[in-house]
Length: 120
Image (cartoon, rainbow, N blue to C red; front, side, top):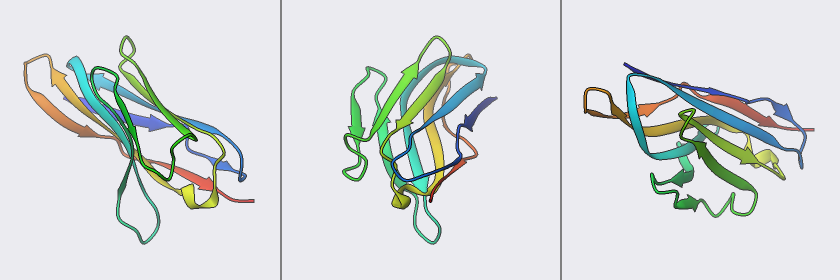
């Protein structure tokens, strides 16, 4: 069984920074593509950033040059560094990962979400 657990969500003032973490655990052989998504109140879940297994990144226009996705393969952990936060960044943030299990299967796993609130 594979589990993704996010952490790092908090209340922060506009212009502030946060770093979200997403730790994968379980019977993991490797991790392929990963991503961060967010869902604001009353809105649909949207893509924030992705990173392929080879390290290629993609960012939504709304977060370019402010957010950075990264990963530590040795720790099976994904990160999202968020700078210059705006009130419109307020949302529950979810991590997603394509996980190769020890049994050779591939699971598309989601974390439970972590709340980021940007407000003065």
